[in-house]
Image 1 (cartoon, rainbow, N blue to C red):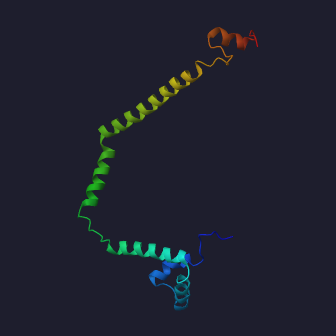
Image 2 (cartoon, rainbow, N blue to C red):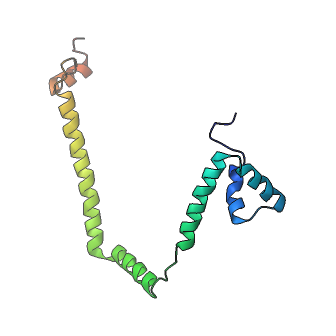
Image 3 (cartoon, rainbow, N blue to C red):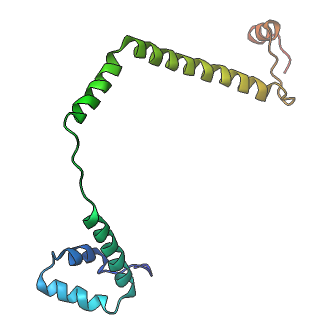
Length: 134
């Protein structure tokens, strides 16, 4: 079932604008466009994009720019100071995440009055030895 806002000719509109259709297909699409408001709107939007792209001018990349970028990237990977900074940053991130997890979990579960778990050496020892009250 087709949706209300779809048209079977919509797939051919790019080829229509670019002149890539055969003469028979071109005439069919042109005739269809005269009565289909969806395709008319789509054609307008495609023509705006084409006009924008036509005005676009490609700029020449300065000679040696690619080499400069590649050299700076390769130097940053081999620089011992940068390796230490990256390693320290990763270690600090892991440590901070771990500590934040501990603080958040202890804060969330510390005030839980409906929990019957007792934390301490005696309670854990008693639990595993079988001397506990349920």
